[in-house]
Image 1 (cartoon, rainbow, N blue to C red):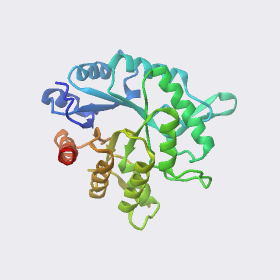
Image 2: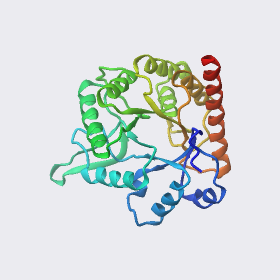
Image 3: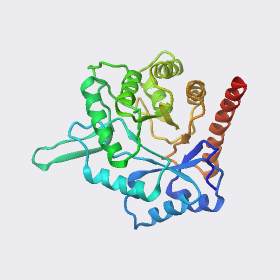
Image 4: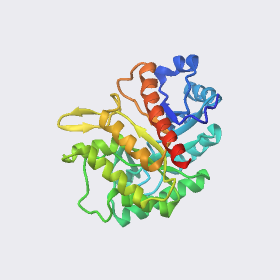
Length: 294
């Protein structure tokens, strides 16, 4: 039932496996966290193989640490390549972050977190080199996601949209545009109008970026914790994020769109309802584009 004309998808999580396989909802794709399926012999890998018979799968990683100056974990890259060979995913993505660093005589430490990088030429060189190595190994382009960050660097030689546009130009990768991350960052930066700040970010990217830059969009919810807005994927998509999504579709046309929900998982029907809203906005955008072309 490969629903190739549908562009909306959901993150497939273990509590929904049984119901999802019984219901077989109409979706364009499902997305899973790559690292959870590296072992080809465990039960989760068998479920994913069965799901792949009916759905396109997008692999979304959290462990490559593409912005790390000490380079990549070769074993991790090989495990990802093996998974790609088994699943033949429609897209492969990870984050513009660092997590690996030298730790004395212990070798390389992994922070097990998505730590932000500075938007400088030096960081760009590192990110381009690491993205290039992954793409060469996988023999396919990678999508790189913009980060929700809770600290910033004083050294900055690019705006964030400039940084990503240059990354795409130099490496040949695409962008996984996480609109919730943009909104979380605007709230934490105390932007006077967070929605306007997100739309301005998207406008700048669209001016600078080549056509087809955005390969996938993520939408999610957030929570407030101890004075910070946290991108924990624990709530429905906020109304302002939906508005920013509609604004992005005006620039990038209908793009494969994922509803992320990782904490306090709702029922599958709630998750599918969020995905249906994204599908309706994409369909409306497609209709507008068709009328304009006519």
